Image (cartoon, rainbow, N blue to C red; front, side, top):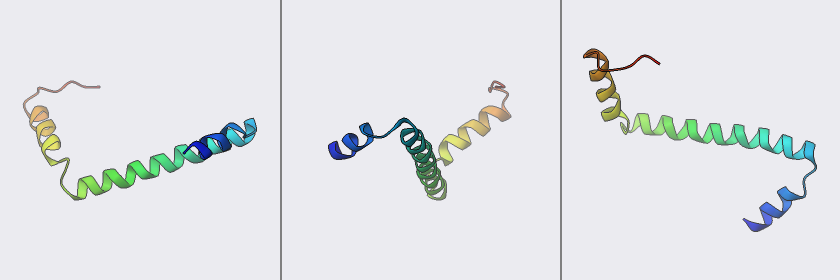
Length: 63
């Protein structure tokens, strides 16, 4: 990890900007894959059911 940090510190501003853009996309894709897997595994069912019950009983707040 230290080697990676040192390499990032050596980047020119334009390279760092490109790296940040790439990393944001990489991170978002990883999060999307994890969320999709969690949904498929039913890990969010309890939370979704609770939210739907709150909505049905008017115990929710509009954003």
